[in-house]
Length: 325
Image (cartoon, rainbow, N blue to C red):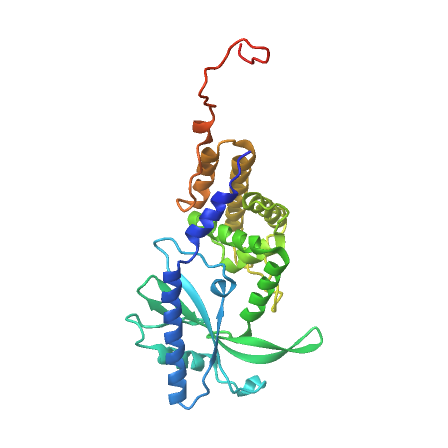
């Protein structure tokens, strides 16, 4: 039985954002916030509030592969609006406000997407600016404040990233930091294998099926993947744990893609099982797993090279307790 816990911890170090990259990203974020606030004040609009969201806020962000951009979500929360949605500006209008505010900030013009304004930086990352207004919704017979996202084609739709972040943090507080690491490992696997799964879906699946009985990350990952497969092989759905709770993140995944995802998860499960329980040599075991996670998964020691006992004295043959034939 090979123990790969320490190697998975090395993988986490290899995929985590470096302090320099974090500093660059946060500098870009702060500059955009200042630009939007100044523009809104110049136009006699209330200065927005801002909130980090997504993987960066949950500390599950990983360094993208070389040909990919890092994605940062920075929510823009418009201020000064009543609970009456009829008095709110149109979603296309608020998209125009934010797009005009950041236009010219980088060499590449901002992109007006359905759910956000995207600002692209040359330093291999982009910042998405989803726009929200806080409103009230009747949830289970009780009036509650919720965030409405400015969707360019669908209008103002309920979408509460703060609630999702709070849900995830509660799960981490319940299960410990190992849960956060398993999410990051699964994201690294997804990127290396180019699997059509969103990060939010991976986060939900891991949280709902996490197995943290073992202190070892390799076994916890194997058990969690097994639990996920037990669920989605029979019921291929992934519902949001916060409103709108009836939103299935897998709703638009074709049957062919579903089977491909299940097949690749099964392959990951088999490789983990083989590496942990069937292989004794750590180096050979890590070579099996490296095929799933890529070069960022380091190789372990070749214990066989050090398996022979050395002694300063010659071995005495034929003694009472001799095991030589």
